[in-house]
Amino acid sequence: MSSSSGNRLKRLLVFNCAELVQVVNDGQLYLAGTDMSTMCVLRPKHKGDSLALATDADGNILDIGSTEELTNKYKASEFETVIDAEKGALMPGFVDGHTHPIWSGDRVHEFALKLSGASYMEIHQNKGGIHYTVECTRAESDSKLKQLLTDRLRLMARSGTTAAECKTGYGLWLEDELRLLRILNEVRNQDDIIDMSLTYLGAHAVPRDFNGTSDLFAHKIATEDLLQLNQQVAFDNVDVFCEKNVFETESSRVILESAKKLGYRLNFHAEELSCINGVEMGCSLGARAMSHLECISDEGIKQMAITHAAGVILPTTAHVLRISPPPLRDMIEGGVIVALGSDFNPNAFCYAMPTVMHLACVQCKMSLTEAFVAATLNAAYSIGRSHRYGSLEIGKEANLVLIKESTWEHIIYQLGCHADLIRYVFYKGRILV
Image (cartoon, rainbow, N blue to C red; front, side):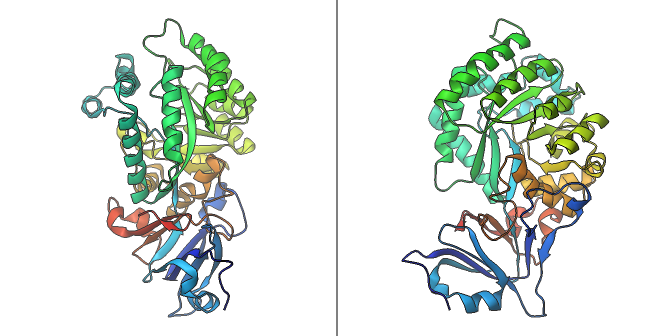
């Protein structure tokens, strides 16, 4: 039997698993097309056997195998934490590819308006929607915003999410967006929080108090705001709400070109309510990911497949707005790297990736396997981190979900029951939930 190196204990040993969902086992960074229908799931070779996973002292996956193999190879005393899975299924933590987690002021009153027939853009153009949340967020204290953000991320973790793309977008003006990014960074640096990929979304809307057009505001962001933010605060991605009557394609291009020159990943809203060829523009710039895509064109699908851009699908949007979902089957059959996100925001108040996967299967016609791949490996790819997590492979971070049932499909099948189904959520080998 081996002994621990130095005085550092390995972080975690989970044994007696009925299934262990690797997703992939050969270092692939994403799955696309028909490959999304195949997923590596380990099951015991013999009746009565079970599976186990061990991490090193830094919380990276050290070993995967049968319980007998690993318990013979390592002593329980070598680990900080030892968990008996009790024949549950062990799987990667979920990666939420699209969230808006930092804001104050819910929009429950607008939900009633939508149910009575008001469209998203009608509410937006009548000073509601994003503008309402911007006003509430600007009026809130830093400490309260930090607490709201932390609470939401912890609720995500309770639903199995171990990483999330986190956008600003409810400040708009430079100083307000800078404030939100600083709070996001403060929370990101906490030890007991999920992994966060930070996205600047100053181009979420034109501020109501801006004296000019969307083209002028886009120019300001591209030539002034991005340069100042780059010098003052850390973030990973740049987003634009590329939409008719918000930021048209060429205005969006101006911002994204500037962001690309500064070295940021391009990860933006495209073709949600109308098709304005934002996807084709994004592909021409080498965008890593584009979200929504309800109105994507056939040419957009083709270009995304060619450029390996991830399509981050948000089933909650179509559900809440009662609009047609994206053409998922066409995208998958066309070879697009499809990922999933919750779109958590005041308009679509859902932070649970199990619910998102369920909606993706029922409303968007994804298979269980496709939805799971999209919520793990492919979502990690959409934020440039599938080399670190999104699958259970030796060397990757041990971001894990352990459920009570013996088969992984239950996490999607049991709509609204994930809180009772999930036993543990681990981040880098330590218990989060």
